[in-house]
Length: 408
Ligand code: CTP
Image (cartoon, rainbow, N blue to C red; front, side, top):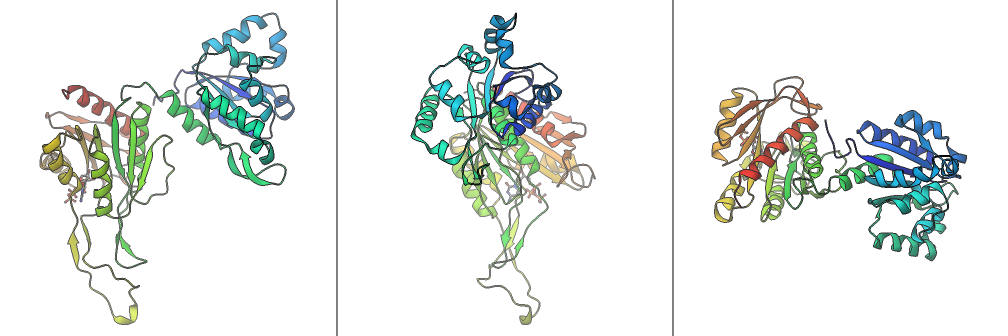
């Protein structure tokens, strides 16, 4: 699967902090995502971690200050900076932040940063007092004003024993920010994509609800795929235990009616709606205010119909044309294509992603999916068993084509 990191040249500057050990994990994650990672260690970083650790995970040379004075030194410092798509310093110490803010160029890392004309992303790590110091805050402000993306620091336990703001944020989160940054200027840049995810919960009483098996994985993967193409993403989600893709604006909802309100508000001017959520069609007609007690006998629950969100959106679309492209999902246990086709027509969709929930390797909770894409134009495309991330990328690619066909 390709991500915005594929074949991108990233310089990873590493400076002297105990968080250096996490930088090795970051270098590994970036490499696994397809990036070409050139690591530059500061002198003090080499006291914490060896260049060979980075060379082992990136498969590329890791540079140290001695390289600035080697035979090819004059080429190295300019060459590295100029070839880079992104310059990352993680962890960045108060000292290196001060140097970058003032344009100092006395080490291979700082001279390369000055020579580079790509975006800069920094992940500070230092003791709480050092981070709060007005000098550090002023340097941070200077770097931000010059366009640097600052990730963290996070609050938590610091090496000094202090619990304060100063921890480098975790590598997976830095990776998310890098992914988001590198996805700018994609084919969906300037487009607003609304994605719904998860299974709605319909309250019976303050502790119980009627729910379903949706894990939210496919919807979250759709949100990530849209971000990867540069879109502005609003992720309306029912309760799930998943990390929000970095860059998505998350709106948490619980019931179908809350999801309807959130989706309607977000799609008023949206280009795309992808309804990946498993919306409960029915809710308890009454929600008990107090916990239902068993002493009172076995209750019978009367159900009421929930709104159909896609139908409501379709009505609105007929009036004002938004969202321009609507995508639905059809989870079916029989007659997959016929049922999906009927939903496509009834809900006035541009595309429907149909999956057979009776298959073991597809549907709820698992990481893979096997889907058929049916379009309003009559195209049917059966995709092989794929990861949910790959299905998401394939769906967003079709959405891109549909937006292209949509005459503005
Ligand atoms: N959907 C919706 N509002 C609902 C129910 C479903 O917007 N109240 C959306 C889902 O998010 C999905 C599509 O409609 O994109 C199809 O959902 P599905 O549950 O397969 O179909 P239903 O219309 O609910 O029909 P049925 O459950 O009878 O198969």
